Length: 321
Ligand code: AHR
Image 1 (cartoon, rainbow, N blue to C red):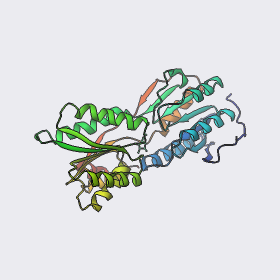
Image 2 (cartoon, rainbow, N blue to C red; image 1 turned 90 degrees about the horizontal axis):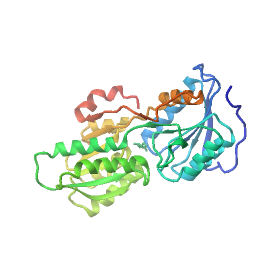
Image 3 (cartoon, rainbow, N blue to C red; image 1 turned 90 degrees about the vertical axis):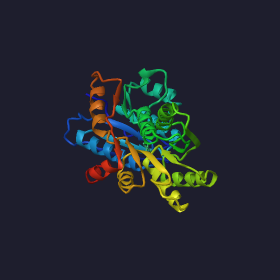
Image 4 (cartoon, rainbow, N blue to C red; image 1 turned 60 degrees about the vertical axis):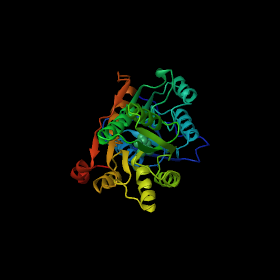
């Protein structure tokens, strides 16, 4: 028998939207309650990820307590503490940034509530603070972006001026996508990152920062955006500056959400590295095993691909998100 659910909702959650859904879906969940702390709703990827988690909980018969942290670590810590007080069976969360989780993870461990990391990693040295980490290999994604660029300019000797729109400062995907990209392009000195700034994974910030890049750098050859949304915002800025995205400035992004794939098919983006948000089904499977004390792998890496403009045209109509 799993722990009974307390109805206690602690104060301090007012900044977040907390909802319960799922349960009774007939998927053999044996009344498991999962507390899930989501990063926010910053991108198309995040919206698809939230839907995947909520739908899969329902299908699996897992009762989901869901909270949206609005991209703030303090909101996630409050949510996790509230889940501990409510004595949920398992906590899953996508950490907005990598650092600063040890204390709250230790509190969960002391309360004997297992934790699963999903989508993003933490940098805690003590890996016993969580049971498993399900998500993409962000370094690999950055490398794939770099490899496309190296291949695209393989015959040229002229310098290639790159601007970079980074994801949320301190987040695993921003750190790792930057590092993977840098590792690959760093082998050839003709590739120069002339400006690099965060756009917080949002379309609005992507546009704003790209406008500033364009003002101070007249000769940008390439934009590397850590997600589609920032790339799409940047496209608006590039068009606003009278330039042609995909031609005057080549664009590489990460995610492959529908809007990004449409822009790729339209020739406004040149290459997209896929990052799948459809983590829900695997998360629920792992949760059931962890609650039953079954062995799970320490790391589960999501399978992903890449898309050229031609490939985007072929798969666009069948994309799920
Ligand atoms: O952690 C995954 C990243 O978060 C996605 O690539 C980005 O779109 C989202 O905001």
